[in-house]
Image 1: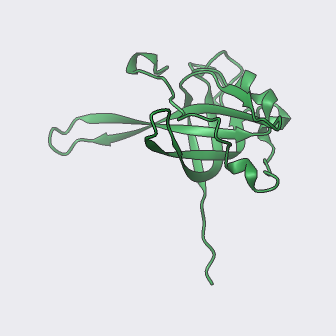
Image 2: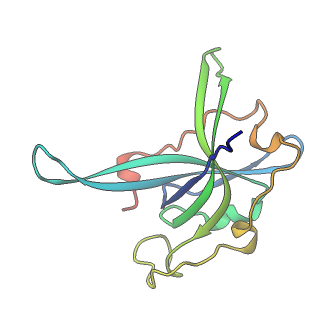
Image 3: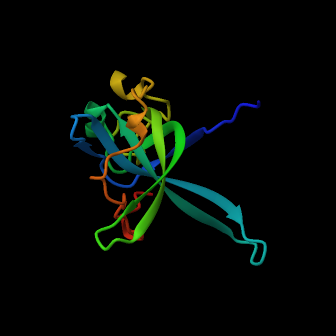
Length: 161
């Protein structure tokens, strides 16, 4: 039987500071959103256009990393796609697609935020953020019923670039 692959690699900017919560069992889960922008030429007008996609990211068992994942920072995220569903408070079934991060690295210089941080080189986040995350017991990728739909809460005015 052929093997399957579920791998996502993103390089983009954080839209807001990461938030960390804990499950009932005490496991840390950090959530943040990453904006990735592609540039393309509009065939109809010949003008260059930018299109930004927002991706929700979930990082398990790395509670210390959230303090470094701040709005505007450029990050490298490697992980896998995950789909889940839940019922909201009105009983409506909601579906969510997100990336479960296995590796997160801060990019750019040591400057504050992702704006002109200088250097342009790759800078690893604290060791706990750059190491591979190995969820144990299979339950790490499926949060309990206490998690709501992850809304990045970002408007066009909040985009840092």
